[in-house]
Image (cartoon, rainbow, N blue to C red):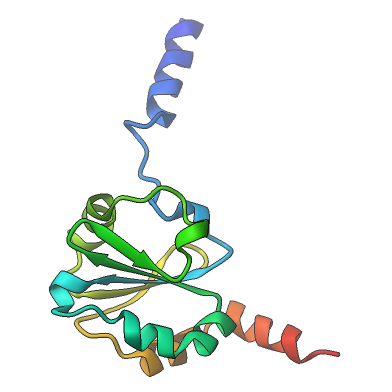
Length: 139
């Protein structure tokens, strides 16, 4: 009976039962702006590159899904990711093109367009971000 319980436990915690986010490796380190460029209708990487200082200050990793490719400002430090896995995990249940994911891994906002100032305002109101700002301004 004990063997059956152990096997059942292994099955329930194994890959088949896992609902872990494909972005789990980024949790508690980065906020994520996830963009489906196909839904958005264009590649917004130039806009995001122009705002690198604001993005770095807020610990943001952006991921742009273009067909089956992924563009990112953290390409070298990302775990192995699949555009189709990200689409099925995040975009199958959300009709928007842009998703903001907090450091805790939770979806904080979704929208049909990329409005960086609105995203920064949402981030700046987050308790963890307010704490980070207090830490940065402390001597």
